[in-house]
Amino acid sequence: MKKKILIISGGISKERIISLDTGKQVGKELSKNNYNVKITEPDFKLLDVIKKFKPNIIFNALHGQFGEDGYIQTILETTKVPYTHSGIISSAIAMDKELSKKIFTKNNILTPKYFLYTFNKSNSKLISLISKKLKFPVVLKPLNEGSSVNVFICSKSNILKKINLLREYKKIIIEKFIPGREIQAAIIGSKKLGAIELKPKRKFYDYQAKYNSEAKTKHIIPVDLKNKDYEKLMSLTLKAHKKIGCQGVTRSDFKFYKGKFYLLEINTQPGMTNLSLVPEIAAYHGISFIKLIELILKNASAKK
Image 1 (spheres, rainbow, N blue to C red):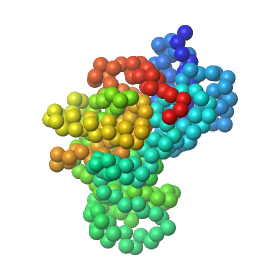
Image 2 (cartoon, rainbow, N blue to C red):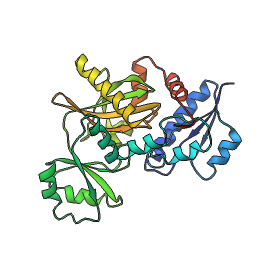
Image 3 (cartoon, rainbow, N blue to C red):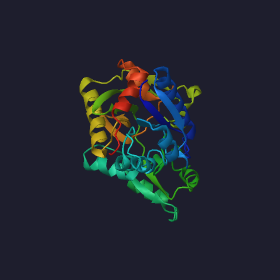
Image 4 (tube, one colour):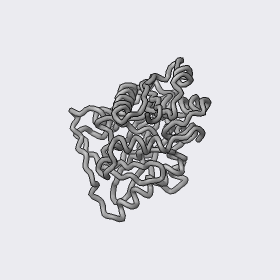
């Protein structure tokens, strides 16, 4: 019998459904390959489940808040059981869009200009502030959500309406919109896995474009880039992965515009569903789904 793998999925974030699907797909594949698998929620019973099941490795299949922001990682480190993906600090940094942008900028990785907006301020001067600092259109995004949850592209005409939809968050990022091609690239361990281009039918690669097959987003692989541009893309992806201090698998989201790559964000818990990009990139490069999962398991550690 192969190793005992405990998969944690579900959770309380807005990405719960995606997490459940990731956990289901990973569990199904591992079971097919004779692993002893158990899937559990990250609830008050979690530590008891870990104690009783005695897994060799914990596969973190959570997405969004609590699952990829350092919280669950803090709990898992108390168990001394190796767990997959990034650790406490790197997860927290990657999930915080402002903090990660500061690290990108410090390390000469282009990222769109932005400013932080807090909802205790009056928005009466917001339009003039944006016009002065960034110019329209702009992108509104929560400081610490994933999967493009509650992300909006805004013009002068709809900015005040859209910003009011985000009042549940204390702070948001207002970012300059970068046109151009949407390209995403993946790293596993210290290996450059590959890249994929996305052509969504929607305005941009939002939550629906990512997870709804009816959105009919076009996936293009291999990406049509000159060799030097492709190498630059993958080098930037690995650089971001290392500078944030990530482990295991990550996916970085870029815009390619006028010959330059702009890093939007890095994802430390990329999905593993039927529509997810990392398995698709891996498959193109001859890495089967089970092999990809085993590579992720291989990179697991108890203290990060």
